[in-house]
Length: 356
Ligand code: SAH
Image (cartoon, rainbow, N blue to C red):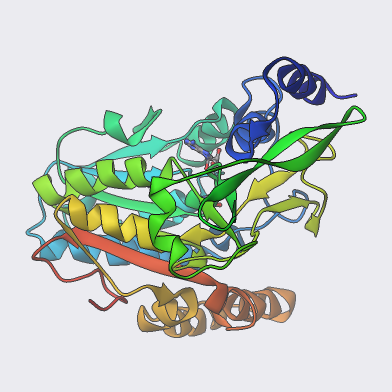
């Protein structure tokens, strides 16, 4: 039995069943045995591939969109250029290269990375070696100044709670033990004030999800943006509001049982954008229409960028570029599943590529 499985089993034996959020937090960020603390999960050798790892075009276009927002808001200096969950640092490296030619942008920026994993912090340090970078543990540690921020596949990694609708209330789906093995079970029925609105669009036995950490993080970044100016681009797989079990465990690019070997697989869930928009609005920000990634990237000119890159490529390199363009934008690949949300101060138009 792995040490993390032993620890979780001991915890459930003494405390009783734990929420899925507690289970996910142990699996992903346990200081010794957590998935992000012990592994480098990205790329063809790892467990999953993300948009910035597929092509440099992704980070370049995000960078130019944020730089345009910065120019449109009068090029404030200094400002925080921030990323939540930067992975290997690839998106930030591509963003920085693409924005080098924007006058004043690099001189005014202070790069802040919000990253929980010491191992990934070390990789980010290597990827961004030429830059001065500050790491912070959470969004509330970002300085009180204009904030231009990107979060790609960050919110899907936050722990979720799941609830199954009963007649009038909800039963939480929890992780317990059966014959010594981890298993899912349901807690007692209880009202859930945060799910009041979901009583209107669900019926008994439907399952809905909550991400407890998502709203406080969004509120903090929206407060900075409302007060000091800036913009946030949040990109993730999901939709306005989800229904049903979206928990996914991936290992070597294939789905696995999320309870079998805790800490060994990436655990994610679809992001519900509705609560992010509500708290952003509550903090005084405007939010854009939720836009499919493919549409967003096309509006930013990804096809022109791909043509420009293609001009100097041949053979496999050219084939790879064409495949990457398709993968990022095609509705049957990442183009439709992934959505983009823009957050700006209340009176300011959304970032390029997005509509209000
Ligand atoms: N944005 C990157 C990586 C996505 S994976 C990319 O697109 O390739 C999720 C990232 O979020 C990892 O860097 C992980 O370590 C980080 N992360 C997950 N939970 C976190 C938390 N609670 N606080 C800070 N970082 C977190």
